[in-house]
Length: 361
Image (tube, rainbow, N blue to C red; front, side, top):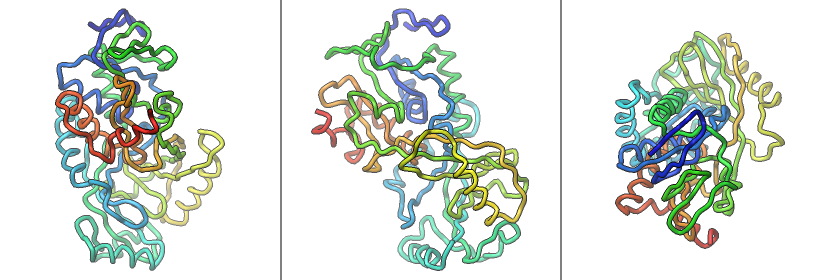
């Protein structure tokens, strides 16, 4: 069925081709592995994709208006069960519960946070000990707490799942070239791989995909730093304009920004200097910058995923457009897509690709 000699593939017939092994491709291949279907993932292991630069925060509230994340109750319920099952496969914990300590930058933001608690206190509270972090941070207007939130271990999950795919000859490590894709009404062919369907989980590359380029993608660039300091508790995520996230071994992820207009995809000195200044104003403890990265997020104007199959070319599908919520959304919608394929269950109407049938036709 599947035969590999280095990166060369000999006459393969599979049910599915998955393009990309970021967070979406990882979860989709995981759920397909639970079926009797055969599949191959094509991914060139690019180092600075959004899935590899992101830190994996699962935040139940979002935005400056501090509103509940879309369908968060369903997402969290599925996430906890999905991670429990995946942990058994890869042999280590991949989801840790944390809380976000949200420092207020103005009295108005403090007031807005308190008003949201009056409306719904399921994830929000104002801790009584407002002096708890005064030796670590400068903060004038107190802080709130968002809990529970979670950290998904992107740094380990994607490479560990890749090892599983390699061991089972289920991944081809090369750049996918869409000009090599051929299809009929009943099958798709990529080089000498024949499949029933192909599903694109390839992040920003889908913007140039001729079958999906009319979707309302709206990419933005994010930059992050990694700092080293021995002072902060690893059980908290700290936020004040920028976010400080524990990564173990006294390392902390610091980010991120959202640049909608950018000249290139590389890290910039402007972000570095601005963030250093923010850290120096915020932190009371010494730190050392050890890394600086940038990536492009596969966001979209609707802030809802793209999940499903092309209305004309029904053996060409997509699982993409997760934006900043990839770790929250990807497991849920990967499972929905697989269930739709095998049991014809519906995909959530606000995520289903059917809402774009008119422009895709």
